[in-house]
Amino acid sequence: MTLSAATPSTRWCPFCRRSGVKFSKEHWLPADWGEYFPRLPNLISARHDYEGESTSRVENLSHFDKQFDGICRDCNSGWLREIDVAAKQV
Image (tube, rainbow, N blue to C red):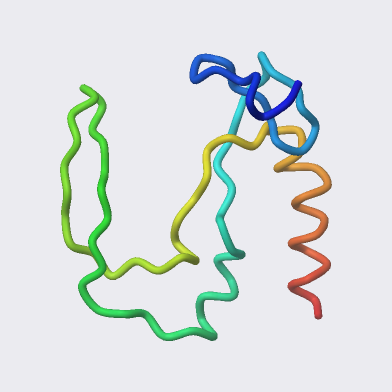
């Protein structure tokens, strides 16, 4: 499947290309790295409630706090987790 062939209703993992599996959230950047970078005050983050309405609030978030929810659980808790553990030891 190519990227252009995917429709909004078709979810697939960007790593293993499987669809119809359970997905989980993955940090954009490892959250542990956030302690080495300053946080900027008053960053705005959009949040969605369970009824689908969008709300905004001011938070002190960074790129280390943000997560992507399109990674399958097998990849996220498997080989991606192994990379996180190995990198943390370094």
